[in-house]
Length: 518
Ligand code: AHR
Image (cartoon, rainbow, N blue to C red; front, side):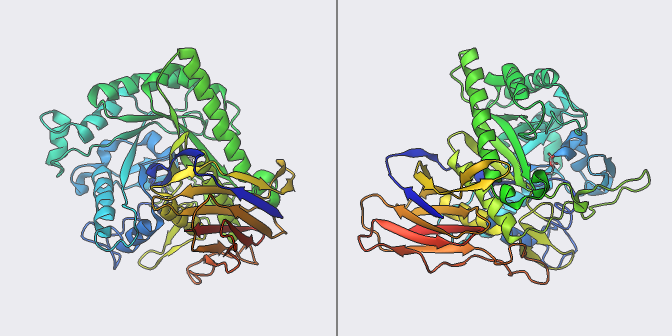
């Protein structure tokens, strides 16, 4: 395979929003309990937060954290998770057929994010500052307008009202100042508790949006789009929901998960999943533009791609417990183990988000720890990085603070049963704050290496280096027993041409690469 990339500084897509490197903490399985919070763990701090996990979260470079769900939020009473721990109720969580102990709630989440920020001070060697932000979801499944407004009052009103004083009595003198609010979760999905028609949801979301803005005009609101590109209601849902809410919201969400089973096990099609995500984004962007035109509005709505990942949803690990007498606490759920090949698909999804960062201004990798996650933990034991950790961490490190360029990519194509002929190589180019370039690349081909040449703008370049993540056994993974099995390796084929206006690099079949040129 051959691919050519032409970089020109004058063609910008957009600045890279920090929020595109968001992640997601849901009360699901062991994401919270035994994930970020485990008071008995030898590395837990005085709040019960695992500091080994916090170190990895910082290394990952995650920014905004979406919380507390997910499907979980559609049955959640936020009040259960505040106040003295000993009086917090144990509740059934119907979404994941589990028991929620409410030991961890809103105050703990705010404190955790603060700790993640503080722990980096003085020890963070990255040249980019890290910002951590809470993106809070309200329950529009079993609850509605009043409960959503109560939560916003509790969180953001400084003092002097019943709920703001309750927050203060619970230990938080200062308001939490939460900006981003998700108006429910996946309300288009029949599996969602309190699932609604687009008309009903659009009407409710508009009411909630108006109410939240009456309390806090700085709020940034995310209305639910489709929970998948392949939903029967996709398109019509976005159009109807936005027709009710367009001027009241700032983002519409997209969710997408990919697994080989979606392609009847065809790995070459799975490797091209980024093609589907790209189409999804472009179609939603068109619907946003169409509703904007119909409303003759000056307001802009962006995409929050607030759930994305590889997820082996059809497999055993994602089966929820069953039985009227069986409601486990923090069961092992959705603990997918990611292969080298999964990391390539994942990297392609990340490239796709970045390429579209003029419209995708927020995204959340679903999820952060243990549950379809880049970070895994053992109760009482280690925390380690899955294969998917690396593309995210490298991209976050290179791209934060930079600008995505509309680089021209010409790639030989590969044939895929699902999408026909697609580019064998996909890439995005980021111009970094210090003037250097990061070229993120995937080779989607199952069997051919790719020779990539990158034409640079006029200038003086002194160095080109590349790191590649690849395994000849593409099913290889990082496990508890073999935590560093698949890691990025120096790719010595990267070289700056003699005229030094061109870099070339060879990337193996099924691989992820970051080329850095300065
Ligand atoms: O991330 C796992 C689940 O996927 C979320 O709870 C839900 O929103 C989506 O269907």
